Amino acid sequence: MRERAIDLLKVGLSLGLLALILREIGWREILSALQGAQLSYLAVAFAISLAGILLRAHRWQVLLAALGMEAPLSRLTELYFVGTFFNSVLPTGIGGDVVRIYELSKESDRPTESIGTVLLDRATGFLALFLMATAAPVFSYRLIAPSVAAAILLLFLASWAGSWVLLQRDRLESWGLLKVIAKLKPVREIYEAVYACGLRAIGGALADNYGVLVPSHIPPGEYQIEVGMYDLETMQRIPAFDEQGTRLPSDRILLRKVRID
Image (cartoon, rainbow, N blue to C red; front, side, top):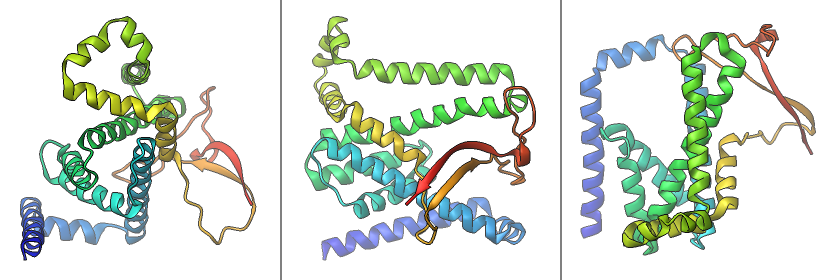
């Protein structure tokens, strides 16, 4: 009875938050936007969004496995959906992470590891984002101001260098930083959980950001991977140029060829 009441409370809270969002945005504005949208673009965007959540849930699963924690992908995907919802409706943008930590801690009885993997999961997402942002000026440098490109590069270098230093336990110990961390027990336990994941697990988690879903009906053979960048408002492809400033054919960025057996 109690669990049913809690479930009803969750449903009521979710519906209330959705109603609040729709009220703030306005029903007419939503209907107008939907009427002016192309359904094919919406379907593609929806599919990509779902695929992204599945990939991020798998990335989280990789980090948990490095700590010997087993969690079904279906459950992690469910928690990611819940977390995404709370990140969207709460002003902080991290409310979903708190929900994921709480639910996983309750189910696994390992709160420290739950906090560590969620923080690391968020960090690997930012690292991959900085990596993609750093690659963008190479192909569209005419559209990006030099100061912005320099800022992106500095953020990229600082984030990756900082992450590398945090995982160098011996260096931190020689610098005396581990002694400082050790004085704060919660911080020390979270750091130990992050460090225990190891570079190999983090590398696997980062790799998920570049996964490509291949439909089962694709015949075997060699395929060229092509990437295009689009304006989010007009959905028009952004011009792409090579290193000499020559515009690329069809504004396509050629990556590499892959073989499907």
